Length: 356
Figure 1 (cartoon, helix red, strand yellow):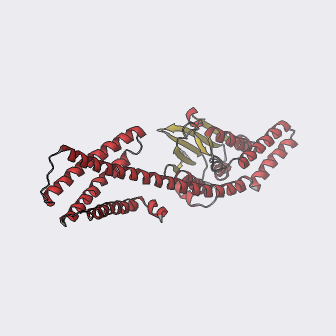
Figure 2 (tube, rainbow, N blue to C red; figure 1 turned 90 degrees about the vertical axis):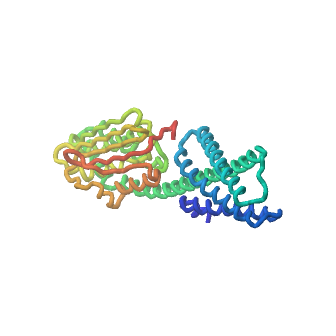
């Protein structure tokens, strides 16, 4: 039951908030039964618990805003906010005692007020500790669920990707191109193509799609695939790559770009009568990695985003895989290219080996 309860953050907060302060009032009431107290003391306890309930609600929204602060600064803010909240609560509590609980008791000693304030401070600080503890637990549960979903999606993507990469048409075209090179005595070129094909297939088989690699390694593997395709298309395929040095260090899911490139070659470049152009750009902007891949295919739809509804390993599978790996921290958009063609834009959190 704990899992589903903590998964719904708003609902769990209010249930715990109400239950916690009701429990606080109950514990204090049971403690009062050990002493001879007037019946009006029950009202005092309820009002005190209600004041604590109301005063701690703003702390939740404050803590949500300061969540990303440095731990030391975060701790200082939490302690300060807890003390201010406790002080206000102590003032309200004292006023309640004086006005409702008429027992001939108005302490003149400042130590009483300090002790009461300190007790309230410990209670509010404990509330803050519980809030952060539950919040971290929810985050860990969320990361665990994303990891499980990513693992499932990645294994599905791996099976589909291998089938897609080992597509008989792709292998047939590659081997046919190699055979043609051998027939025309271009043995050196044929040998290089065999090596590139071997390295590309080895990369495809060896890399776990769950793990991330640098964008530089991803581009290197992609160029092996594109070099094979360039032999097929000869001068009809123009590849333009522009990757900043900072972007090369970024971590991305392995085999991220290959299905997108293969889609572009199959559905766009192959239909271009003149020269098919593939542009691949990557740069870092505001701690986000931006990857832009464009083609000049003639049959791009007016509303490219509708292509995501198609089934298969290409666009939709890539989007689902990113969704599993990054949750809401990514963007995957399809846009029309100018003067013709399609652009795929991927925006990811900028992660490196030093700062994963």
